[in-house]
Image (cartoon, rainbow, N blue to C red; front, side, top):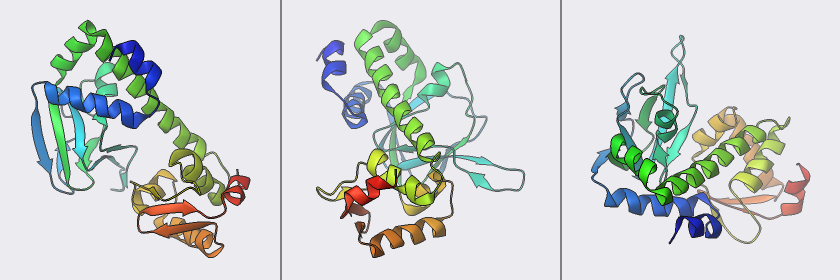
Length: 222
């Protein structure tokens, strides 16, 4: 597949991630297994490798003077890290990177990837397309939190970010704590609003799966 056909025929982050995974596995690499809560890099550590998550979730953590943890970003299965820091010229982590749950990652020396970006146009365009899709997702979360009411934010999140519909069940990869963090609310507030949506028979939940029962009503909150 040429770089041109990659850009023309693929339209979502999952498809680009699949290609990047195959390419990572073809490069000299190390595979590392992480337990939940295990720190892989501390804030200030030198960045000399690019990672790709085969399984699990990683969280970025910063700490306030009061000792509170804030999580500006999460990395999921099928995502790279921290390519945007290195490509922007940073050589140190600006956060502590922690396994949110048991994870399996690939680590590749950054110099290897840097050389590929400079010499392989297909690699370069694939990386640009991947970063563009991930950047778009980050912008959607920003837009989500611009809505004034919690219900409107949840409606936007379900419809535009997770793509939940009335056509079937959608698996939500984020747990309730992560979602509440991204919505900048407490977990209790999130759970209460989701239960109200269920009581009103607008949505239906089954563990980590959600489907819409009254999609037009939810769309009306936007």
